[in-house]
Length: 114
Length: 115
Figure (tube, each protein chain N blue to C red):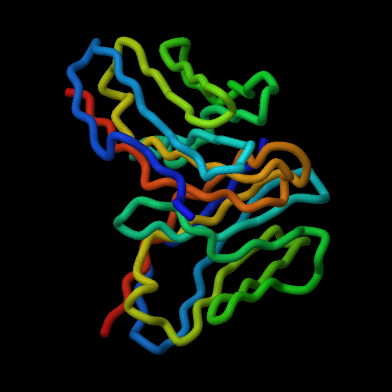
């Protein structure tokens, strides 16, 4: 079946603009994660969704970052008033519910803030 | 807080030879998972191998094996019979045993395969 799909693949935006990044997880996967990969910070966890439970937002770096997951499937990561330090690759991953189920990652969205 | 350290930013190996990538970690937990992920230029993180901390036996997946030393908090990856397709960034990662897989990653090792 299809893997985790992320769009757009690349996004260039001007400082101060809002951006939305989309993640379509593997069908049947109830857990969804967002990670950020940047030159300065490496790979870091951002947010976690599990079914209809409240998301774990403990990794979000500021209140400019938010995410939602509609219908337990597609997720959107929104960054408001983008800053140059937001430039990074944003990776989405999904898995079955159980903690020992492996994560399946998408190809990420490369965000460049100019 | 848990930390993962990869001390080799770059490694290279001749095709068909064996290479070992190093990883150390720090945690106060007794049960956890350790992972090696491969990231080719496509950017997709691909799981190479996983080790459960409660298992003494080292995990193996075909040409990939680990040397897990729990007391030393060391988790190295050995790639045997290296192939050109093995060239990629390799990340060591940690997650708690229960709950969400909020992975803590090392800084990565870029592996080059010389033909």
